[in-house]
Length: 275
Image (cartoon, rainbow, N blue to C red; front, side, top):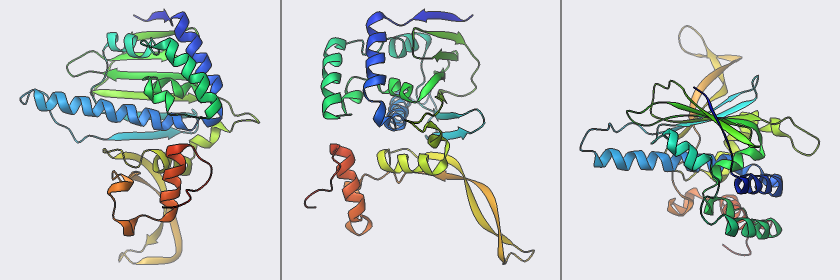
């Protein structure tokens, strides 16, 4: 049975404020959802290690996929998942604690272009509405029932029981239509997704995987390359290094890497004066 619930009045105001205040930096939505997926895996891993073998330890990973025809981006994980109550408490109520403080600091953040304020109040999920006309969240806890959360981020959301074979959460974003101001279609291109993962989520400790199209040289019957002949193949690629910049060998880090790290971390448009 599908249940429809309205967002709380304060939640609607905050959601509207956030979406319309930081729209020019909408690419951070992917960073926020990947971070949430990583947190969910951390929670599952902790519970599994504490369960004395009752909960299995899996090969943890985060998967991204793009459907150009449906204009969707899907982020899935095999983390802790959410119950119906979790969906209501975590997704149905935005900034449930300190929400007034959040609202005032968000206004300040808009003026300073300080995007870190989003994650500080646990509303990273809602940053997806900066690019989405609709979001579906299919989720399942260990030995629990699967549920589907659906919302357009306006007045209400729905929750219904839905079969899901595996534990974890799958978030599907239906992109807004592109306009003269914003090219939402760019997020359907694999180079854009790869660049955003490298830019914001390279240090995430779990592999972030996506099927990508690669041009490979055709081989003859003896396994030798056929000169001038190539074909497109779908390959599952890990997009992140899983190693923080500060833990890499100096020889592996370029000046460009350091400059980008500084600019992204401190929201500066100029390169650092010194490294």
